[in-house]
Image (cartoon, rainbow, N blue to C red; front, top):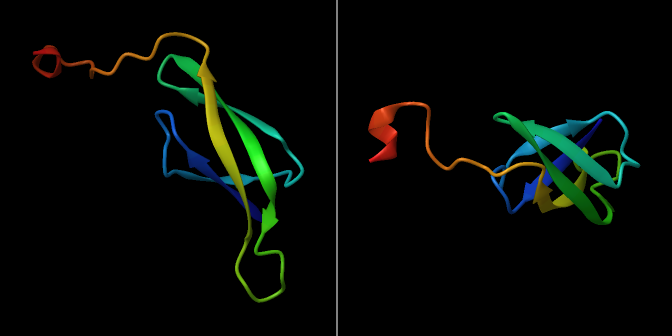
Length: 77
């Protein structure tokens, strides 16, 4: 198993499982849109005893504008 460590954008700091560790781009659903992350660097922690393999992905763009407010009118003050 491999994991993607996300940097920047609305999912900064999140870890996602990678079904295919060779991916160089992730398109992830976020709210009512999608966000795009590009891979930078090689897999890390690929040894037998150092945990799951890990790849770093950096935020590139959102397909639509991201609303920073919640759905509640209270959040929009």
